[in-house]
Amino acid sequence: MSAVRLRVPATSANLGPAFDCAGLALTRHDHLEFEVTGSGLEVEVSGVGAGELPTDESHLVVRAFRAACAELGWSPAGLRVVAENSIPQGRGMGSSAAAVVAGVVAAWALCPDVGAVDDDAVLRLTTELEGHPDNVAACLLGGATLSWMTPDGARAARLDVAPSVAPVVLVPGDTLSTHVARGLLPATVPHADAAHAAGRAALLVHALTREPALLLDATEDRLHQRQRTAAMPASLALVDRLRERGLAAVVSGAGPSVLALTTGAADLGTVRELAAEGWSVLPLAVDEDGARVLHGNPQVSSR
Image 1: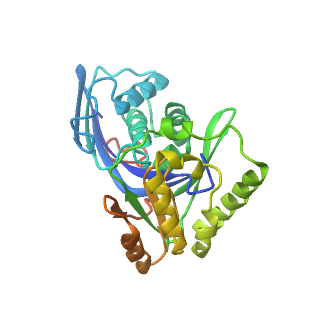
Image 2: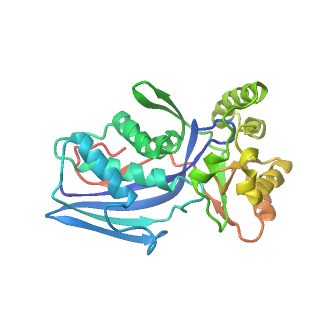
């Protein structure tokens, strides 16, 4: 096999209190084609990032692909990558995680010495490349995920989200660097805030999977959102407006997008009503599949 096509979903991390742990896969996708060629590198980008993203070895997808090839002990002669992007970039929807997962999964799918995509190995490597596992775990596995670090690397568990939960993402025109957003967090937190986060994160699992009526309480956060208000005041103001109307709203990942976990058709109307000018409202669903090989070697897992 010399070519493969992949689909990778957007993700939202943290979901309020479960900082650097919880992730949710969303039905907004980038599609990528990888082809092993005789020599050189060719990168084509359309959609989001076209004309802005690099088309050489510095492209994040290519860097992830090369890292996976090194892990596998494989060096293809040449590579062609065609990316059709629809995941907003720099807005807390996991665009970098999607790029990293796509590159690593593609290498596993194309490597002639590999019989299946090893989710555990892919998760460990993508976490090393991304720096934390929450987005890459959800992108790889789909659904909702809980991820954590061990001495042997990242681990993750997948959860099935209650069917009534309907994610809506509100995307502003401005971007925000994850590095900048993380730099605003304090080195320590009060014990009471840590205890609050532990309780709410535990409740979040139950609310997401069994009792969505508890999502408003379960998504209450004291660890990281208010601490980053200076970098995205409009996002926090929107979160407050939505929560005052009873909607489980949080900052999506490092922001500045906002995620609302709605549970009924009326909720979407409320979201649209409260969204200020300049915000795009994206009604989505939970992506149950995660990263998928859409066609390629039938011996390779198409998870």
